[in-house]
Length: 320
Image (cartoon, rainbow, N blue to C red):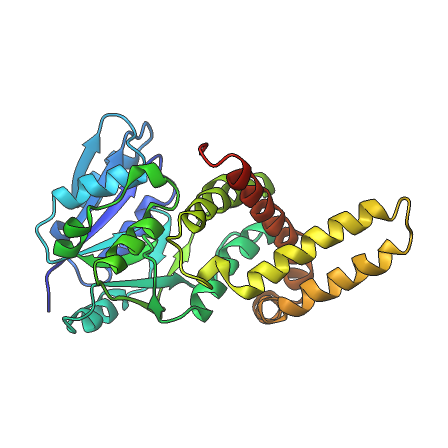
């Protein structure tokens, strides 16, 4: 079994880090195998990491996650680096499952998934965290991209690929995975390797993240010819959903002067619901009708952000 070190970047993470570290330590690792990169925090993040007895690297100012993770890797000597976000509570079996995969020398990296039990009870938080869960549960097991929420990679391969590129902030893990694959790396997605995401979302934070942190940089990768077709958020179903939302918006505006456009608007709603029926059914299974129906406007807003991000990156290609 290859040696493993956990690397956890943490910025202003005092509210979630204790649960994160307790969960990581419950996997069977010792505190010496866990490294927290305190990325310029001004709260109790560093003190809480010290109380847990884990290793700490302190950045005097915030370097942001990509550079913080790179800094953490420099301070590890293990064969495999296991990245976990500071707001994720991993399951006790994640290390055993990761180790089983890395016993195969052909496996370069392994990523997991959020679970289906996000603790924040607001509809927007449950929706946004469960959307990520659903995408990873249904995605191809032979992944094209990496993920740092719960993801491990052989250190040698990480360094050979150049680590995370801070120019791709917010999707630096996705971009890193593309470089890793280009060098012949094998990235495996195991959806049973899970953790609970503690993040609390609002409509504003969701839309901002989906627009600037996802849609714009993803579109830039696609336009650069680096993103394979039908990967995660670029599948045919996602494209149909975005088109349905756009048609609905245009039809509603057109109905002011052409009432028959309401028929088109209705058809776009049917199309949107039909293509997302599996996701909405999953939400119903987890949270009942209240969650399934309540999530629909947020899901539509998710695609509005995707459309806006695509348009921005298309017409302003040199701006980030």
